[in-house]
Amino acid sequence: MAEEDIRNHRTRCFGHILNLAARAFLWGEDPDSFEREAFTEAAFQVEERELRLWRKRGAVGKLHNIVRFVRASPQRRELMKSLACDQNDEDGYQLFEEERAAIDLELMQNNETRWNSTFLMIQRAIRKREHIDHFIAYLETKTSEPRQRVPVQDQLSPQDWLLLAEIQSLLKPLHEITMRCQGWAKEGRHGA
Image 1 (cartoon, one colour):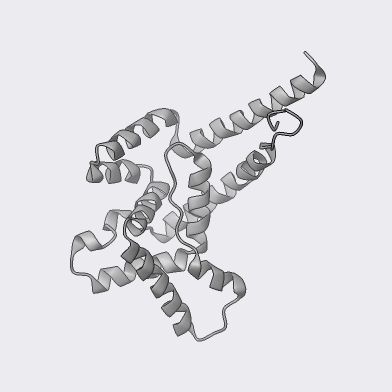
Image 2 (cartoon, one colour):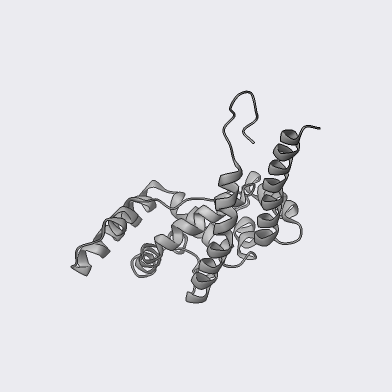
């Protein structure tokens, strides 16, 4: 086998190893069984069982449920954005460009099959933490219908937010290395 072929082969294996490590970190010993179970619950649209399944995953699962709740309705997405604008206007100070940009960002939903999507969901949520907390508090005080609020079991505590920040900091190097391992095919190679 040519030296270049060996190097390309190792690069692909390295990316695969990173993927397996990140999935095991997020989903435990048997990430495939969790993915199958989550997919089955979603396919059969057994909402409450799916929510409970995700809650078992701790802070990441609660965040998944919150993002799903917000993204399930265009009205909720718009309300969250509106509340974020109002919240920052009430603060009475000039926003930095990055803070202003965070208002327009939507929450990102992860999927069961890609750990990178979970990392990106956490990263975006941390950036929008104040907006998420404000949205949940607003619904708690303004909505009498329980189905129109984020369930109490899914609300993130300060400890949950700290854990999400730690998870983000642990996954960030894996995400960056994974992005570096990706390639774009040149001269008939497969991008490795």
